[in-house]
Length: 384
View: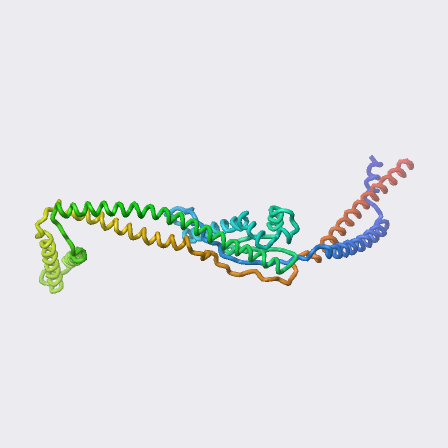
């Protein structure tokens, strides 16, 4: 038991004077090796090609509409803003996917002759190198940043601008093809609506011949109907006033008398207009048939007119070459080198060597303590 305690005491009482030479040598070796490692790494970084970055900024094109992702009825005060934010994020994600698609990337490779520039044997290899040198990101406001790195600053700017050109062409082709398909569909709907209009015109003429109702002055009839509705609304207002005044006013009150007189006059005008309509000599059933046929004809005319306007718009979009892309900033050559980061590489190499020296020093201390422990234990055993 005493021998064990003596061994533990010997291991804990390692003389500090014996560690000072080892610590000094380790510190000197660490500083020298760290300095040499940093210098070698800094010198080796000159063997790497310089890189320059150029950035272009663009707003996402509205290729699709964002789906509704929240309920119509919501107690959240931020519900309206959530729809806009989701829409911006949705459009940005789609635009980023388009920029990374093979259609746009291959167009950039062909436009900038990147197969020769990168020294790649195939278009696919050049595409992979281009994707490695390109970084596409989107901010909270939806602005898309296209960042390209290359050893030539002018070439990096040219590649970034080629992305914008390819995106504009893609959007134009997409919008034109979509508009052409929409124009074809509208043309079919318009043909069906025009055929329906002819059929309803024939039915309307038959109703006129059968009922004997011929109203050529459609505008005057519409004006009379509008005037009748206006009179009825005014009469309703006067009746409400009479009911309210009856609570506190007497029948001899001048205001009460005036409102009653106005209501009586409105009733007389309504009766006169309604009586004129009944004097036409037609039955109510015939009038209903005529109004129904007239309503169908007018509704079909409005449908045909709306489809014609949509068709004109779709045909214009199918032939238009206007891109739906808003470029905020085109890339320009950047003379500030972005890589390699020689100072950072040298610092990392220096810190790495210092860490290795510290680990080596700790390992030597452990070995030294084990050696001291063995020597102390041997001397104690021999003394016993």
